[in-house]
Length: 233
Image 1 (cartoon, rainbow, N blue to C red):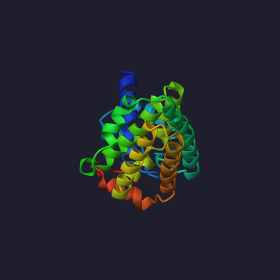
Image 2 (cartoon, rainbow, N blue to C red):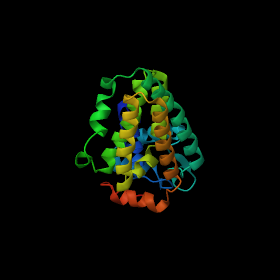
Image 3 (cartoon, rainbow, N blue to C red):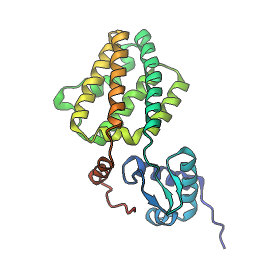
Image 4 (cartoon, rainbow, N blue to C red):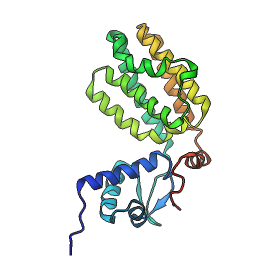
């Protein structure tokens, strides 16, 4: 009888697939599922699924459920508030450094994405969500502090699901383009106080939107997503 073991690569693959299902609204907060269900859907044995779930449980993305094995935790708004507060600290520190020493070429990628005519703006919410994450990550990375970037990446993952809900609304997409453009221009003009004010306002607006999230919004996001046929209970 062959030992029931999985390769690290397979376990990592399953881990990332489950995490993507959470971020892409295929598994919603409160959804319950079993290792057997996931294994069957992903075409693997239960071993890599169990290994992936244990790791995701340690990171807080799933938790053991007395009813059906595992579940996605309900949204913890107080924790999200704390994570957004950390974002403000890290990103304002980065922007302050950028205003002191950044050159226009340091921000070429961001300028190409956000300083565009209205008719050239993207409309797809998922694409904008990825672009938005990249905007904030690149601001922090351009400041040149690797530990700051690492911490910022961790925070970004923790709040990804709720940030992506922002971009199911067309008005929020347009507002984000305008706000990012203003932040970039202030940085390029080395107007540090204005850049910091704009950035804080931008993040605080997103933080306020989090409090408006309802179960209906989550289910609507799931239905709008291409992968709406994931069976959960």
